[in-house]
Image (cartoon, rainbow over the protein chains, first blue to last red):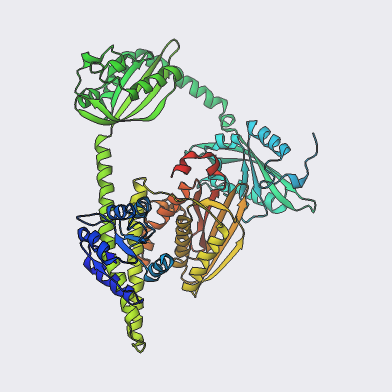
Length: 113
Length: 520
């Protein structure tokens, strides 16, 4: 599942990952993400940091502190400064900076899968 | 004393040899400057300097190791003396000359320089020892001294007559400066304040005169921070620079204040001049700039992310029978987007460095292997260039690998860019004492002497070059700052039209004693 408030990036990243054979779920509204995760149970979450309504780091903190979702592999991706530090502080499993190279992103997904 | 054999006299692995330590300590206690240059390395770099040399020239050891001694000569011709040195070095003979040299602060000194070669068992010159004596004073003739004496006498008489005028002048001077200035007794009682102080802190002069500094504003200034400063001033009786107090309570709200205290000793007593800079607004501006950088980074990179992702998607979805023109166009677009991405990153890096916010992520890595990797990457991209790597520096270094890769990549791409005809580029690695040195030599346009320092400034571009070659002039600035952050030095030596050698040195041991770097 991918969560990014920028719908252009969301769609293209989704298509890129589909071209690698993944089944992709998209969510642009971070406030709707948590209920969707508990109902649709994705295998991995790729999530942006700077989003209105609910910030990505807050979501990751919640997911990692919840027994049912703590095991969900999470990759954070962001164009912001100090994002890598934020990602590691909240317990994300990996991080990739935007703009990203799709092969690098795929390698990270494979490593977590 | 036992005879010290050549094997023991090495500057790397045997640094702990007791006899060597003893010798080095002896060298550090002498009053004459001593340097040792390694004749087995290109351009005879300095591998050792003693403390007296640092004091004499104003350059620290970190700034000297790896350089050729000629940096002391500034822009002077010194042709005659240079010839003597050149001949002596060529023949491997000793020599003694008096030469005009310059200290780090630009001041001239006459250097009585003695050069002595050291030979190995096969009679090859391996090192040169340079012994330096500052003989500037001796150069002054008796007549000059007499003239100076007379001048001083005259000034003293005038000074006596003008003492009262001087007080008026002093008041005018301290009233003109923008910082708040207080003149204190050594017991920290206020005897004079300037207008800026009264204006900045909304205090009347009679409220503070004869007051102890902690008593200002009915004791409101009696904060922990100022108590600490007062304690340091009373006990150490030395000048203090850049003592920062945040959230300092004043009548006009909390302020960020920077204190500089200067001690002036008289025959019987002493005064302290305390300058206070109100940097509250500056801090606010810095914060705003930082916020702007965060926003700019995010806002610029978001559309770039969409564009690069779209391009990658288009490339992946391209049918196998797509025309070569289409494939070529996509590749070109990708390379321009990459360039744009690097520009954005460079600009943000430069701004980050300007605000002092560049962070190093340190790790141990194989330095030489890193260089080879970067060179290999470039070999794959620039088929017309010939890269040659010689020597070895170190297979173990602790530093920010990615940032240092950025430096190497920047220096090499500069060499590639400015060498349109002869496309050979030499990369020379060496280890000098506890430093590593990298020199990148090209045979391109070269850098005129007058620009050799300025090119490391941000956004500086040499005029004629600007028109012909692309770039925004931040690469060398960023590289220089990264090397400085690693406590090293980066410099260029070049003759216009013949090419340029960009070199940098990095100390191997700075992390052992530099706490600041652990924290970064």
